Length: 240
Ligand SMILES: N[C@@H](CCC(=O)N[C@@H](CS)C(=O)NCC(=O)O)C(=O)O
Image (cartoon, rainbow, N blue to C red; front, side, top):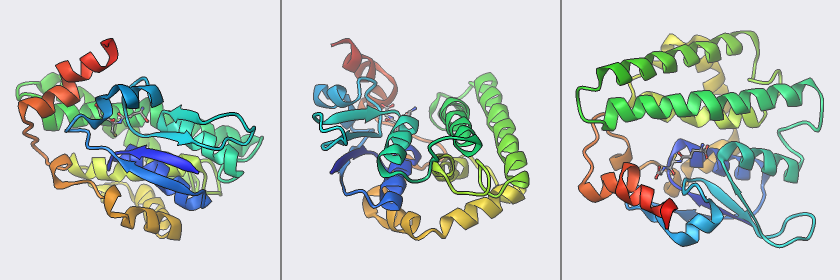
């Protein structure tokens, strides 16, 4: 059994999709990140970085005790190896899947996150930062488009954890006003992946639907919510 500690955001959706795809049994524990549920010492023992998602594998294959895994890319790789699905054991397809998985975690995710912060949350007047991260996000979307114009899926002709990592980001792109129709190959790939029955079941879970309060184009947080997400409460969680 896997415990999935999750928030209704693209990073959390990746892991729920993977668990549905692999049919590994799991329980879902939903956190409200604006309320600061991720900042508790208990959750810090699962993920020292206090971010979601994280999993606890209560029954690792080697018979050792429960294993905590954090960082969505590392979780996807762990679940692929546990289930033997969506990541070949060796060879070029495995290498390309890990390259695109790493690209999502190191480039698309963080740059999209910064673009989202400066466009949607930061006090107005941060034009330099908003412009820098929006341009970088658009550059990365062009990289994605080029890859998908030459390949059916990210790693090649087979669906892998790289596709699972990138697919949920369309919600973030949507709230930032990215028009996916400007990226025809990405749209083609997005529609193909969207029809997968396991993905449909994951995305139909009400706990995975991002609440309206996460989705605004011009976010207004209360002082406590701001502190939990970006301020004193968030920093205090790692200095206790
Ligand atoms: N690189 C991390 C990113 C995790 C992340 O930023 N998670 C967000 C939700 S999508 C979060 O927990 N935010 C709460 C906070 O920053 O306090 C991953 O891929 O798992």
